[in-house]
Length: 322
Length: 186
Image: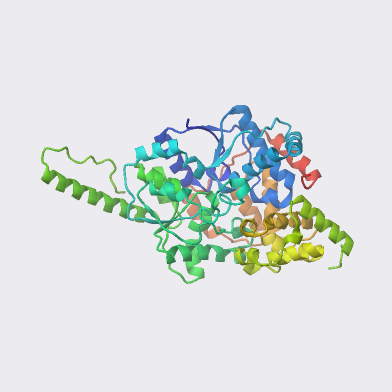
């Protein structure tokens, strides 16, 4: 059953445009049924839990309660690592203390059972049925692209909230990306912090975190970094040029959302995947890879045709080019 | 700053914070693993392990005055790696909330950003990234921060100036008001 209650979060309608486009393309391709939670609100993100614990639990709880009402029986998926963490915290708190659950109900003035599981997009695309559907829809190979999967903090930590078995070396995104033919590299900064909102409110202190992520990815031979969160993506993609200036570096590592690579491998063009909307140029890198793989396919098919002139010609499904 | 908390008050407060976090701070043997893995430690004036040490001593004043509790990015690396499963990140967070309630602030910009963020939620129900960054720049005096990215954002349609708000605004206002009455969850 590929039916989910959907909590897009605030960034999906503004800064995460490439995430949104590519996810919608992929969801449509594989026939994912999503039911957006009606009139959802901000999860409170970092601000609420910085200031007030009850607020941090109640804001996400309203969304879960709305989901229980409108989309009964469905688990909730969300694209953002922070939204995921906050929704999962509220669920965890309510499931572990009846007193807290009731207290939250009193605050939001709604029934709140904390029944749906909270899933991030890596969970969603790790589902065997979803994965199988994705595999069926792959028409292009990203072979030759070396990718550093960047998970950041909240998708793996804290373990009691995420249920991640190996918070130091998660592998879900690696397994998803491998479906596209791209090669995932081993590196050390998979779960290091990008600085989150401190890139805005404490830039001097937080910029080095981004530089270290690029440094480690580059040292381990990454052509690209792949993320699964609007903010992780923006912090890296938007600030790469600045990091190069600030630290006199020449990092040349485009930063993709993992859904962009899935979309491209399923045949999406730039408009559908959003790869031309990056801050740091990403289009050409992907185009090179697709073109090279396509040329190779063509060559192989020609040789095959020579050997066996009666066989059908190559089926060209996705054509590279602007 | 004058000592506001006497020793006994500090000790009781430290005990309460640890209890709420479900942590026994006495179990910390100062191995420093939390501090070694902390991505923000370069900017901390009090290392995570020192925060725990202060909690052991009941020296809340030292913690409340620090920048560290504000610069903590809540990445939870410390909590994940602690050999005694001390949830350092949650302790940091509780200290920050207490410090705020008592009027301390070791890092004005961080507080300002979070205050504005909370206000945008109160009035719109959804976070407004344009308003948030703009209002923060004006209020903090960092007027041109990140502005070089705005034209690119608009051109690429990454940022759209229209607002996306919650329909049931009263529901959100009520949640904010009700939760602001009391602090920690029992």
